[in-house]
Image: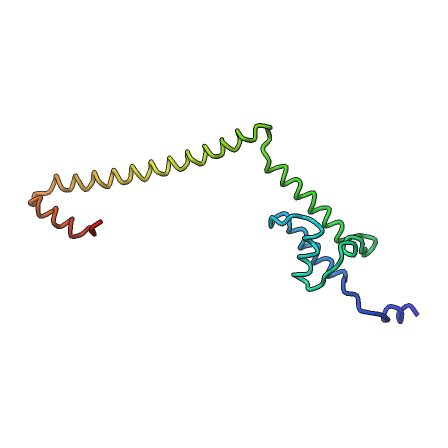
Length: 152
């Protein structure tokens, strides 16, 4: 009788394999930057798997006395909170930390611009050295360089 009872009725949509796929999707939420909320779980489940399950069904359904989706949600929520705590500044002077980040970025930009300036200076000194050390008529050299470089 038990075998016939399992065959009767509508086919189960939320199976254990689908639940495991949903769990993997939920585990990727914090890394993807998606907020871990039940509303997002329901929306993404519908988009990805084509079934709109209620929050209660997702959170309460059990397999082998374990709420797979509910456990995955709680784990992803705690990971999201840890990531949020790690990304916030340690001190209450958050403005100072933001300014220090900005200063570091600007200093890096200044260093790259100084390197570019040095490279340009070296190139121009090299060109001047070529002009000074040639025995050709300087007017001819100027004409040649004017022909080589496009007009600005």
